[in-house]
Length: 432
Ligand code: NAP
Ligand code: HSE
Image (cartoon, rainbow, N blue to C red; front, top):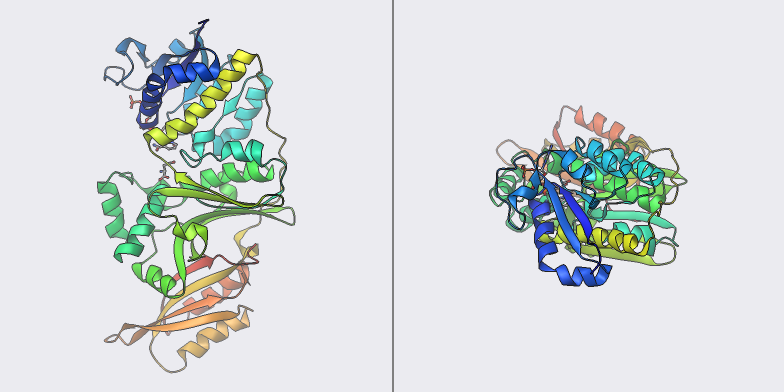
């Protein structure tokens, strides 16, 4: 066979290890797909003295120059994570004429536009299938298979850690801190879980999805974000009694040409496909004019599933290299206004702990009504008989985010209100 296609990795950890194993295990099949063998050249790591399965020590390096000066490396696969030095290394690989594949949602969400334009300027490709949804194919379907559509919404569960935790809260009736400790013990949650539980990881992924789906420029800070750390087992239970499941939902829509992008614990009607996506699984639901609704579901993380997505990109680039096709710039994106949360419209779930005494319900209902927030349902639960407190759970019809937060502020300042425990959006027709 003629010359192999040289592939070097930046990072040989969880995903990098999966890529090394999968490359070694399917050499002939990959060569058959590409028309040439794929040859693993080097792997950049922090600690080159530690043995890694599937790659000899003399192929490990701590020096990016060893890879950039290797004439046989044609594809650089970035699997380090984080914004820096990943951004610099990807830029240098692209400007040196290498194609780049990355699984890094943070760098693609924050600096993707710059990187894609550097790739286009140098006639090389930058692919990032594994950056969203781990092993689920979603970047490629949005870039190619759904391109003829006008996409109206993206609704997704794109963080496995929080989905695992919310599923456990729902099934075990356990509280947030208990399931977080369990998720950390099982290795699903990081010792510092902030990026997952505060919705930061999901916001990076949603920014990438919205950019592709709506052909707009989106940054992570354009995503309105609420994490799961204030959720209680009671919210999960009350939601279930109302016929809903709480999911950390990432949603994106273009409304009258303006972007609405949110990550928030959301009440999803139990009959909806996304309500049934449990544990560490991810799912992305796309609504579009021609195809209608499509749902992509599968493992959103893990060494082998993520290697599947990384290698799909590597094989795609390698096939183009062999065929002499290289540049395929993405469609142009435009900057649009991003709607602030006060202008979002949604149905809401509200849980308020109040003094259990005459007239309280009427005062709260009055505050909602005064701000044009129409109540759809209300249930009262006994909270603490000794303290004579009760919990009121309201669901609303569609309401503006601004009107709702003014009403909630007014409710929170009432002497009879002990706590506004939760204000969560609900899925439903007309949300925007
Ligand atoms: P990981 O296990 O922490 O591995 C990171 C690797 O990069 C390690 O080999 C590390 O070297 C190396 N590295 C990090 N910083 C470096 C630096 N400054 N210089 C040289 N080497 C450096 O991470 P991972 O879980 O494989 O994740 C990699 C990427 O894939 C991230 O962008 C992540 O968001 C993305 N991703 C991960 C998953 C998943 O399931 N884990 C799923 C989808 C996407 P040492 O080994 O010497 O420490
Ligand atoms: N921390 C991420 C998750 C890993 O829990 O989904 C995959 O990006």
